[in-house]
Length: 324
Image (cartoon, rainbow, N blue to C red; front, side, top):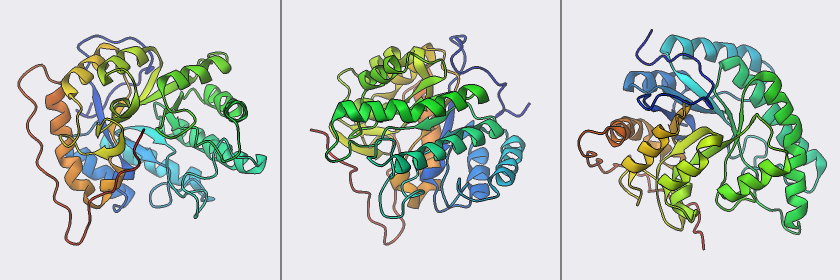
């Protein structure tokens, strides 16, 4: 077995405390690379897997030959010994003018149905790739829509996706996203209770989002989320500012966070998410893995990260939004 290969396990099953964390990198942070080049880069760097965002530049979920392309990607992942999570956070894959539109909360049923159809495709892709989860999120509250109506739309929209996920044997991992209707761990539990706690509904926990707006410290968030964890995203972040930062540029103390994650027995991928640093994606991918491995190790301090150098003419990313 390749040192990057791992046997398939239910991500919800308890594991030995000695089981190491498995680190991946998101393709939304490698948007300037062809998918095959991105996968080869991650394998060469020693990553365990990849967070594969379904988008036009990589695996386009809307092309008519999606099953054939998915089989090609599955073969390549197998050759490289990479695990995979399927992510659905592409900004403009459904609407060229509206970021993350349409959403599961939109006023028009046909618009909501387009997002549901994307998630159903994502479930099929995930099953064909042997992915350990499919990631999704709620979307923002539409203007003129009250929260109770939005929560009903979210639950109704996700019901057929959860049925498909259960049939495919792939957990659906909903991400609390700052600024969205479902923004916090408490919101995830509201959805879970509304849906009757379905077995294939899990949680995507973004460690940076915990630092950004959760009342608990990130390590405590990890412990609280443990029973429902099906996917984890990781980056640095500051309190109150939704800006995904390279490691060392924010405020998160990573060793206790990763120790808490390992103690939950989580078996899925922990995926670096730096989409706004895609212009220097290979550079950040190279730096991120040794940082995470050192932070997850009981030996020695975390090495100081090398300050990122943007290519000539590039400007640094702007914050994604301040949280009051």
